[in-house]
Amino acid sequence: MRLALDTNRYTDLCRGERSVIETVERADEVWLPFIVVGELRAGFAVGTQGPRNEAILRRFLLKPGVRILYAGEQTTHHYAQVYRQLRKQGTPIPTNDMWIAALVLEHSLVLCARDAHFDALAQITQV
Image 1 (tube, rainbow, N blue to C red):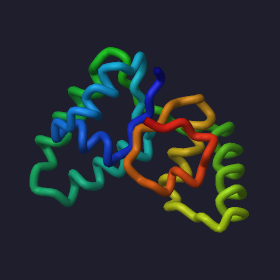
Image 2 (cartoon, one colour):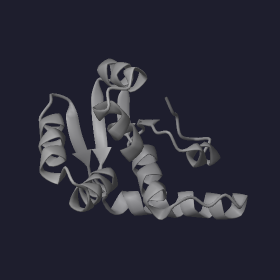
Image 3 (cartoon, rainbow, N blue to C red):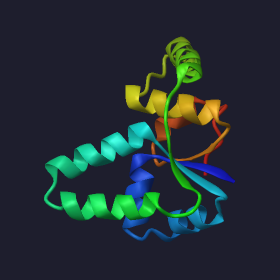
């Protein structure tokens, strides 16, 4: 399985949530969309454990099979399709999550997220 972690699931992983640990362990590849990394680092910047959390993130990113997923030109086309679909459905979701969805669709990843609003995108496979 090629897995993309959303911000809340990365946090669950760090907190030792068994179901997320098992999902990550089953994955052949684990991708952190750049948006997720940005959201995490924004949280680190305003939290009291910033350096500690950054060190944990860096260790995670050094694990075999774990990578950051960046957007490219093709991602913008997927973003536009997601935007159009959600607008037509009348089911908007946060902008950052539309970018995550675009990356997941572009790279045919399975999304590990806890946000119910991703359910509005039936074409995304979730665990």
